[in-house]
Image (cartoon, rainbow, N blue to C red; front, side, top):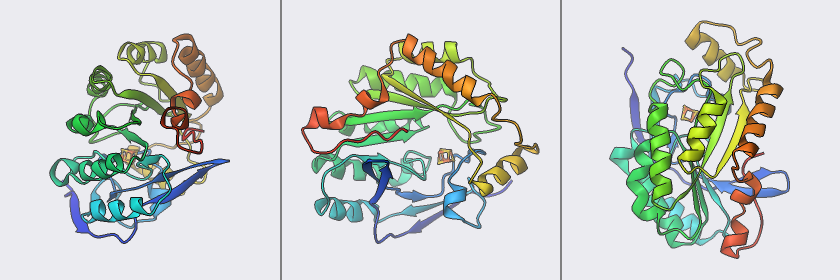
Amino acid sequence: MEELEVRETTCKTLLHRLDYGGSSEYTANFYKGCLHGCVYCYVPSLIHEDRRWGRFVDVKVNAPEVLDSELRRTKKGPVFLSSATDPYQQVEGRYRITRRCLRSLRAQGFPTIILTRSPLVLRDLDILRQFDWVRVGFSISSVPDRLYEPRVSPLERRIESLRRLGDAGIRTWVSLAPLIPKLMMVELPDLLGRLRRAGVSAVSPGLIRFQGYPESKQMFENSLGISSEGLAEGGDDIIADARKLIDGLGFQSTADFFDWRRETGLEGYMNPIT
Ligand code: SF4
């Protein structure tokens, strides 16, 4: 069996600007690589790395100090954790980098948005509770199965984690992505109903996209031994169905849910989900 490679590295910068149309936010990636190893992940197409995706992670061991210093020089705005890795993948249990960075984000008053697939985020409830504005999300694809997401926690545990976050007073959301129309292992009405009952406030559906992500397409096909052609057919209908269910179940709109300015009094506006 192929070994998982964990390497300690250092970084010079962390905070990067992400622009979504007229709005913007920051992102920070404390790790390079992700041991969750989802076969549909788009990140390999962004970082062009020779090592096999899902089998390596570089730990930026000085990230807490670098981030703390950068935040002191940065205009306040929401920070998204993370755009190219999972901030709560397995190694975070040992390194506690995300935890230490959260402390800085909270202490310096930065609104923070987390997206993960790991219940490890519950470890940091003590810090999350102290934020003026924080949103915690879980990703749920249409294929929540070891074949497609080798080292991701089961769907049940993710829903239970969302419930526990909500019970602790943390506002939660779900990135319902990627949805692969020809590979639907979840029943949307059932899943969305369970998310609603777990106290999730907002859901953002998204389709699988391989166009413009050639490395990801190749990884998907090689991992599964199938062609990805035609898998996204019917996507518009799936998204329309999902949106109808989301509205019908009374979830909050993502624009409202992520409107940090209204609650913080800081300037600017941002909606990370387009
Ligand atoms: S958890 Fe996210 S970053 Fe990690 S492999 Fe899966 S899709 Fe990629």
